[in-house]
Length: 376
Picture 1 (cartoon, rainbow, N blue to C red):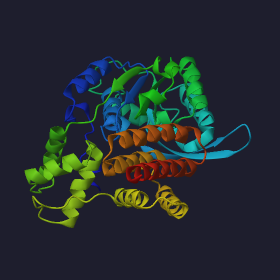
Picture 2: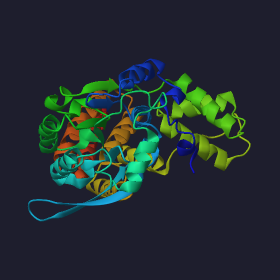
Picture 3: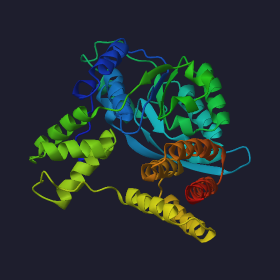
Picture 4: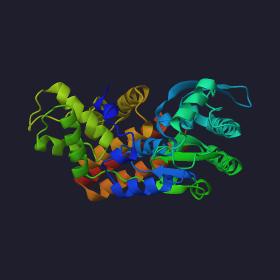
């Protein structure tokens, strides 16, 4: 098991960063009632970890007894959509964005099914055994089941900012219809991509990225649990290289341990292969701007996408690498502007590689014009 999963906090009391936010969540869960929630913040900030800890605080240990379910949905056009969900007796977790343009049907069907069930355990395959487990759990977390037993189910939707506008509109209507028997917890990176009607119906909870000292502290704690001596200098360099992404920092620490044991203060912090690949792509397109170079760049972009690197991650990382290679401030501004432009186009396009290639072509044009103007 990866250290990331092995040492993931499973209760609010075990969370190391953002203590003020943790206290707010504890207060919110005290009476067993919560509103619809919208957790947002950068990747690796701990949004999902906090959500799962909150569910355990509300429902008790039963919320941790999860199983995978492969669900099939039929669209009005008789197309079959298959999605994998994670479910317990009290909640179901899914990423409807995986259904692509059919995400609105998935959102409506799942919430209708969950909220329409008559008992708390009926939805998740509730049988006699499930009911017995629910009774054993006490239905309410924290102080030995003393708090009021929740009467609602929770639907946890991740990647809400990647849903289409139609799916978000369907989500808003479904939230209103089933609010008495179902609570939605939405999770996203960018709240600006969530439509106002959905945002206004949720209590927004911002989970900021942990600071570098906080990440260093978590790395030290994990290293101690694993019996590994972690030099302070190496921990600081991993924190900086992680970009304040705690998930990434823990993966980098474990990679360093696999690469070199015992850990050394001057040890190299290795980047992921896809990051090195994008660095190479950025250098290639600054060295040559031609149709042949664009075709070669397209091949590398395809390679990244087929290896499941999200297109928006590729675009942002590529823009960051290109800006780092630029010396002219005006050109940096242009690159940032067009990166934002094509980031918007990505969300509206069915062919992501076209938008990535268009960004590379636009950069080549800008950079070629800049070089020509310098020597004119």
